[in-house]
Amino acid sequence: MLTPEIISRLAKAEHQHKYDHGHALVLAGGVGRGGAARLAARGALRIGAGLVTLGCPPAALIENAAQLNAIMLTRVDGAEGLGAILQDNRINALCIGPGLGTGEEARRLVEAGLRSARATVLDADALTLVAQHDDLRALLHKSCVLTPHGGEFARLFPDIAARLAAPAAEGPAYSKLDATRAAARAAGCTVLHKGADTVIADPEGRASTSAARDADAAPWLATAGAGDVLAGFIAGLLARGFEPRTAAETAAWLHAECARAFGPGLIAEDLPETLPHVLQSLLSQAGKPAAH
Image (cartoon, rainbow, N blue to C red; front, top):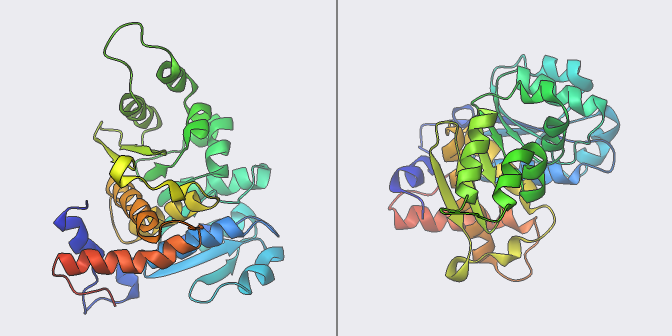
């Protein structure tokens, strides 16, 4: 359950305007590869970012424009184009990776995003690129959140993953919590290690778990695109000013709660659409007015 302080922060005050809740930019891949980024963008907007823009290559503009309304759209002409967009300091959070691709142009986009020093979620293809390129790893900073599943974690942190997978010769056993803390220290940023027992850790060693097992199980999250929505939730909270670890913890809990609330038949598109009902319930229980 979220703390009363976090629930209070999820509410919106009457005197605030959209820019008080930040502007998240989600980068999309080329033609035919925009779905993952659109899911992330929808998640960022639903969780309360004041504005969300999806940035894509010029050739993919029409495809994305046909499917976006409340989410804004901008063309990104490579890394230089992204740099120009980021001259707007009101853009305070980035989501990079869903459907981005892993070629040289994608690598340069990740580099440009990291060099901007914005609060940044790196997911999916961006994690693959960081694992492949030491120069990108060196650009990670404390305002980043990495969101690997088990396979991505092993590619990013092979030595740590090998120790986690090794049989325990003596106790206590090396746990997923230990491994995620070590990964966060090594990367110098927050790591959200996904799974039924998601673990979130920051470079200072502070860590928490978001377990979705037994009575709290959320098996419906085992569906394509669910991780993209989680990345968007985190990006939206970063845009709203949440610290990286808190954004990751809050997003992970809400993500699972949406799946539990929706139940069987869940697909990724349902997660952002279920979130308003989950937030309404939380705010009502806490005696807070619903966000407007």
